Image 1 (cartoon, rainbow, N blue to C red):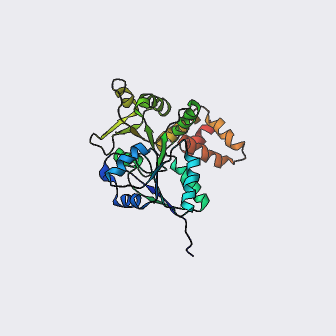
Image 2: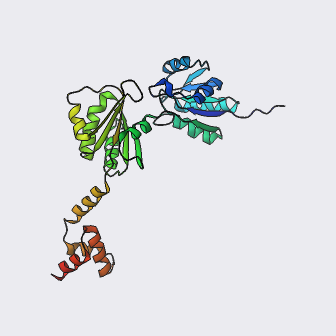
Image 3: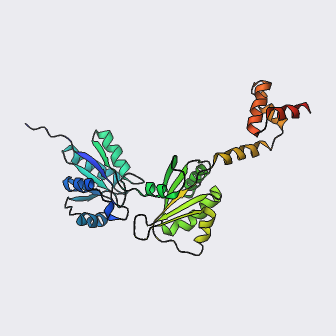
Length: 283
C-alpha cells in the first residue's frame, strides 16, 4: 500500500514590473504545482497565460488569509503541492502570505522559497544610501495613533529605512516624515524595473516641495537615511547642557558611583576632558 506524503508550499516570486524577471524555476514550479494560491486571480491569470501556465488557481488575500490557509493546508496534507504568488514581488513580504507560512510550520508542512524580484531590496540597492543595516516598515498604518507611534520609533532609527507608499497618500506621508524625522537624505523610487523607472536621490524637505506642484503617479518606495551616530551624540550633549557639571556629578554620586568614576562618566557624557571637569569642580 502506497503511503501518501504531504505536499509542500512553494513561495514563488513574480516580477514587480518587467516580465523578463520571471525566473525559469518559478515557471517550472507553477506549471508542476497542483494548485496556485494568488492574491488576485484576475491579475495573476494574465501572468500565467503569458508563461503558458494552466495550473488551477484559488484566491488567497488579506480578507480570507486564515480560513483559506486552513483549506490550503488540508490540500497539502492530502499530498498536493501549493504555489503561493502575490500580485508582484516576493510573497510574505508585507503580504498575507506570512500567515500561511506560519500556519504551515505549525502543521509540519515543508515550506520553500524561490527567490526573485522584491521592490524593497531593488530600491535599497538603487538608493545610494547605506545598505549594511536597514529596516523595512512596509506601508505606514492608516490609524493615526499607530502611525504616530511608528514615526516616534523611526526618529531614533539609525538604520536605513524603507517604506512603501501609494500615490494618493505620498504627499501627506512625506510631510509627516519630514515633521517627525527632520530633513534626511531620501531616495524616491517609482515604476521599478519598468520602462519609465525613476530613481530620485533627494531630501525629505526637497521631496515635500516637489510634490506641492506635482501629482504623484505610480507606486513609490521611499529609502530614507537613518539617524547618524553624530546626531545621537549631539543630542546627548545638548541634553546634558541643561544641567551644570556639579549637578551632573551629583546624579552619578547619588547612585553610589565613586567620585573619580563619576568624573570620568561626566566627561564622556558631555564630550569634554576629565581635566575640564576637575577644574570646574575646583572652582
